[in-house]
Amino acid sequence: MNRIMNHDVSVPVYSKGFTLLEILMVIAIIGILSGVVIGNVRSGVSGALASRTATELREIERAWRIWQIDTGYNFRNEDIYGTSYGTGPERSCTDEVPIDETELYSDTESTPGWNGPYIAADMPGPFGLPYAYDFDDDSVASDTSGGVNIFLPWCTAEYQSDYENLAVALDAIFDDSDGASSGKLRWSGGAQGQIMYLVYDNN
Image 1 (cartoon, helix red, strand yellow):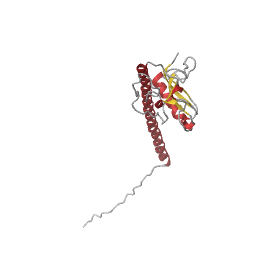
Image 2 (image 1 turned 135 degrees about the vertical axis):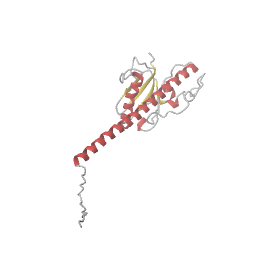
Image 3 (image 1 turned 45 degrees about the horizontal axis):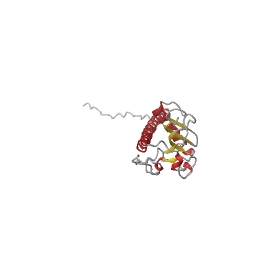
Image 4 (image 1 turned 90 degrees about the vertical axis):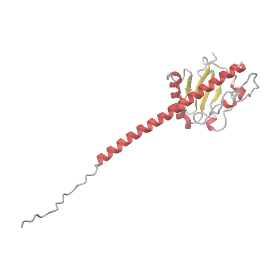
């Protein structure tokens, strides 16, 4: 009698791991993709902030125009509202008065025809520093920072990069990126600087 013998034949299975080069390539790809995602998120946040700030600047300008119609007054020298932007090192370099201390919010000067408030809600500004009112009875023709402006000043290097990046984005919105010294939106950079939104040129 013939018997068929069953023999288990074991075939060795080898597990091939990743080489160091392959691992490094994967890490590099992940790093590139992460950079793209983070860059897009930051760009989106920056764009949203610039859009919100532009809307608020237009709203403040509109409020001044309505105040003019109601009262029949031209724009007042800023000093009538005070000479302090507030306390703290981040506010120490300018004497422009915050918008919420002007007649847009309350009838500070008992002006005939005043029918405000002309701005319904507080506007803290894009980085927590308030919008300010600027008018020294000068004109844009005599000074690139002249005329009636809504100011966004900063006084420490901590804020410089944020405000300068915002200025470039706002310039694109208002003036098709015509630069820092012309148009409706102007700015001066550095550790102490300001964004200036022109309401009235006073020429």
